[in-house]
Length: 113
Length: 114
Image (cartoon, rainbow over all chains, first blue to last red; front, top):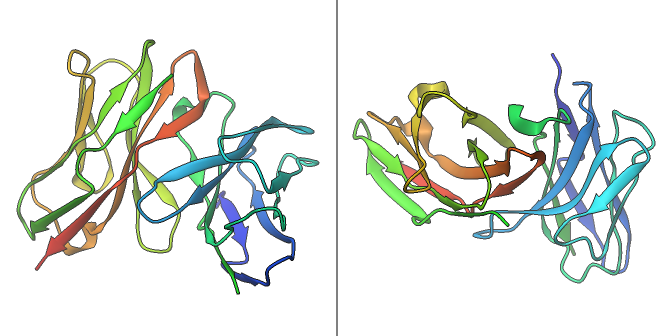
């Protein structure tokens, strides 16, 4: 079955380290998104990409970076510049015409120790 | 710019009782509307969507929502809830002219009490 795979499910990071969260989809969707979820704050958009080799900053891009070298893959790097990285990270994808709705991965919970 | 308001952050309801989760949006252009459900430690799953046509939309798990343009609302309802409906529910909106970017509401936590 088609879907989105996020890995790992749980990730622990020491302060000052960069970490990369994986997101892979086999839905042949053009657009992919990264959201951050904190308790009581809903979803906040970090980055999105509508086509390979192109991406745009969302509302909270500072301290994060992405790449889109393949249609299927949209990894997110949480850099040491991100002041408060502990959160639940969700990857999503959609057709370019997103009215069909988003398909979400199962998320990665990042904890800074 | 669009925005989404979910007035109730938490809604407790007894099992087999009806429930309504409220969603209001603001937008200067026509929109598409969505409801998503999130179970603990999981991603979001699309419950239903309104694109056009009939204002009453039926979704999965017995949920339905009604689009009210004059009140800019898209409330989610279920006539009889089950324990398994305990989850976080998100209302979302996107512009018809640029529907690749979605704005999510803050979420409503539904707790079904046995």
